[in-house]
Length: 172
Length: 354
Image (cartoon, rainbow over all chains, first blue to last red; front, side, top):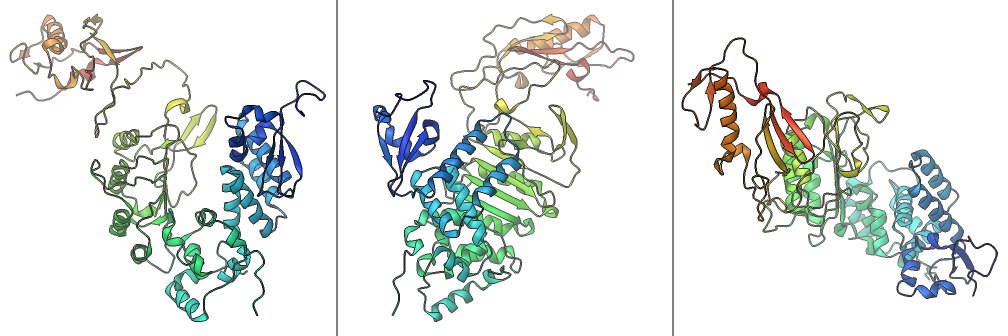
């Protein structure tokens, strides 16, 4: 259907992904194959490539451009010889996380988990860990959106048990 | 009335992700997290990653007790990180180790069957070679180990993966290397990093740039091609050495004494199907052929009219040293594709003879 009918013949094969909210994304095949979930969709079903739209039920279209950008850049970093300087990778990663709210970070972690891409998942979970490192229990609850379901007595007892872990925390 | 909790994000955040996030945190963060909610209360006790970073107000021993008391033993440890290992209290380290490891009949030491990565950071003044060797012994039975990093505190910086770094004066180098080589999954995925700061690191020259680094032992394609007259020969790979053996076999084809090639039969140094070499030159055990080497030396020295002590053809050959005589023939091992020449002075031992 959509495959080679258009413009130049040297064009990279594209795969259409459908985000949770129905929006479509045309993605170059190697980039799409970074996602194990997409890859497994085509295993033993190579013909499907031509006109299948791959539904990504857990990924909102809001995060798709950033996620695809991550795959494109990191696969390029991996292939490049000599390998890119650490500062270049670091700069990309920092820019990637900049202006991402905690909420957005969580959603992207869920997306990476669903897409089954180790590299992105590792990167995002480490970023989340850095945000809660050395923070108070209240901060961590707010970060993950968790209700405190302990009674005040229980909480006091657990805190007393683990007293040493509450020293020297950062400001929230 | 309680409001509806709009999308408690945790309920949609699977436990494996929480563990994943926790794996990047230090233990005080993880332990503190048990106060967050009922669901989080016991997550840390069954973490497959364990970071034993001792809080500054505790001592390692007490902390290990605390860990042992709470941890769920049914969960195999995949990653163990001890950022501040104090060897003076190493009995605590052993207790921790015994707690985490699993007994395997084929292993002398309990094994970390699922351990993939181990990171230890020593207090530098506690550096103790023997403990290091013991540790490597233990790791012998960690068949899935992919990365081992050992740091010494005052040096700090991390070396890259896939590199084996040994300090030239660490001692026991051979042992360490053979231990490392004995990791069943040794491949480019295995990393051993040992950084020891007590001696100033020598400057070494690597492909055009001078870097400060300990001597680096490299395997496989990681080996840079050195300039100059280098000969290489392959290890004989199959059959594998018997367990516990650190010998690696080379394909020896012939031996020369001085310019005289002895012309051994190709089969003499062959390795039997069961992995045992037919002849071990060093042990003189099998067949008279090996004595041929000594006979050739004897013929040579007899022809130079040196005074022999004892019978010709004995297990040892002994001659009186003659002042001014220095024409000791070389001994050359002809390996496949490479000759190893031993200088004449080094072929023999100078000593008092009975």
